Length: 179
Image (cartoon, rainbow, N blue to C red; front, top):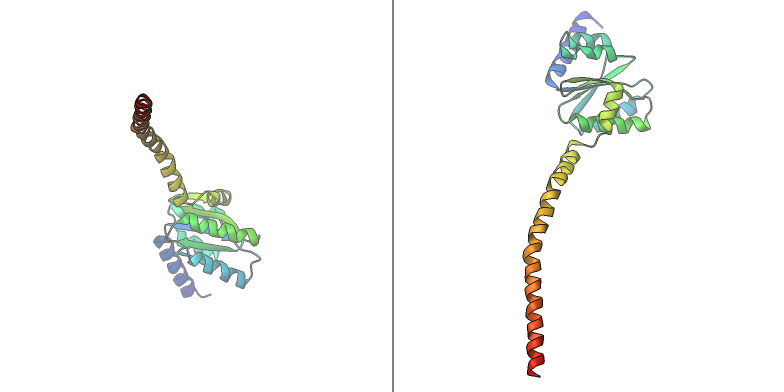
């Protein structure tokens, strides 16, 4: 690769790094082109773009910023996933793919402004999705309110039932005295 080509690749990578808030670095040694294409398609559905990069050019693209810590996680042939949307869905997709393709593994990543190693990314992938967590939170917060509403409704309901029972007893007593 000529120097001008390398400069173009570095410029493209720098633009991608600056444009995307999340980066996931994976090792892919042993995956076929067909498998990589399958992974790319799966990630594209989540708003992510997987690119096989040359480590030296990627290091230049990272520069000296906060993301430069990713350099410690580049081992062997690497692919970088540039994520625009929710990183959790992308991590889950990579993790799911890695279950059937053992050659794929997390090396490191930059998610929500924090540097993670491969083990930490695998743990993040195992967490429930944000929507599920928010749903659980709503359920936990609404349970005491539901119980309070049920308790408050019980008082008038019990009063009505008691009054109906008294009215029924009086009707029976009135019917018994007439007979």
